[in-house]
Length: 79
Image 1: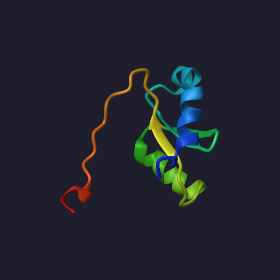
Image 2: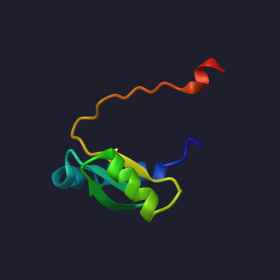
Image 3: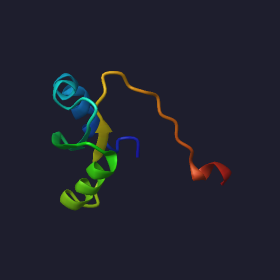
Image 4: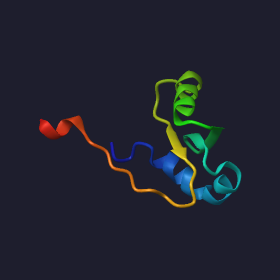
């Protein structure tokens, strides 16, 4: 599971400078080594990804110069 989206994250990192220059503040959809599109909202990007790519792993990431730390709560904590 750890390698899930590794290729997509590498694609984001490898193309970071050009992505910031073109898509800063937008959400990009990355599948494999290709940036497939940009969207104004995360939900638009996810909807497009499922419709165009299918029910397979793909990355939706907001392009920002400075990464904000994220925290997530898991439903598995009480298990």
